[in-house]
Image (cartoon, rainbow, N blue to C red; front, side, top):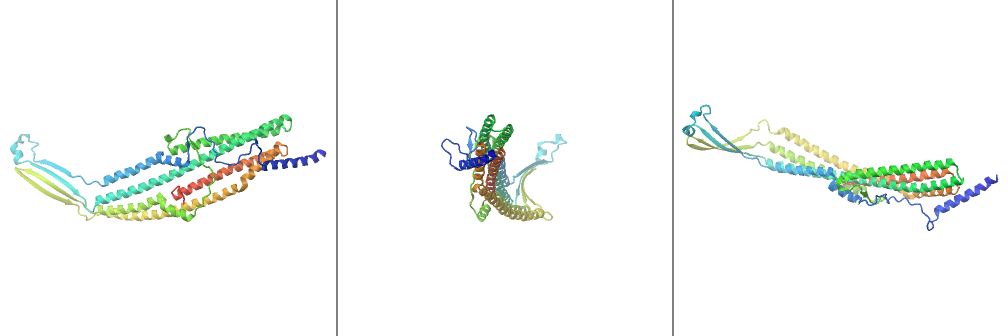
Length: 442
């Protein structure tokens, strides 16, 4: 009974000392538990460091998907040259009434008196300003293609930013895992010393060592995620544009955003390249309609012919044109008219899609912002304080091993959840930038 009566005051005193040690500032030379600052990344020593904006610029210059997409603009510009070409004149010549089957009759008198020789030039005169309409249609198609390529750049920028944040998340998780492993290794060393001194049993020591395996596994998984993330990001930047040992650098931290939905939607309607492509598609459809109407007008072929026969030389002039009785290109004209309606509906759909994308991204950012405020309001400090109290109490014999391990798991789970929530918030912010169509939000 005396042992039990003495254990309660000792336990209370030990817990009180643990709380005081956790709340009091560290003395000189005493290590303080690192705050959950995730901006300190596990970067490779000597690596080329790349910021997020640098990564986006590198992708704009070296991403092979974008480089391939930009060639479509050049292809369309080449088609403009073709559309602006005039028809080539046609040169014709003939020699008739030649005695091919009676070669002996081929004399100079026969050629001068019987054989006939013709030389002519014909040219197709296009009516309805076909060439001008072809050129305008080609230019409008180029404008649509250019806007579509701009939209590809928007998509690639979002992919780069997303992968960049994933790498930051992996490096932050790796830094946390290394920190936890080093901290818990000290606990293992203390436990082994206590086991040798007879303060704890072998079962408690084995439980602590098994828990160490989890920390080592976390480090290995974090290293794998980091290596794979850097590899995937390198592919987006242009594989040859960055060295193999490059790394990322930036503020992997909470950055509150203060902007209104109306301002974001108004900005998106001005900047979204896919909406511009849909708007330009209406112009392109109108150009095609005018071109088909011009094609319905029949062209005139003029021919100038020179004839030599029996000491006579004559000039003949011919003209020919199809009579538009049955085929007036009415089918293509009608199809082009429906294509205008289609383009207009696509523009209205794109306009609504832009507003919907911005609203969805805005609501997603707000939801993630609320979660981040919960973590930064005190949960992180409470989790670390609980872990520190349990660690101090266990090392001084005032808490059980299970209590300490449970506090350690709760701390690690909270820190990982915080980093995941932070990554989700930053990804939601990048999604909002993609939805608005610019990296400079209003």
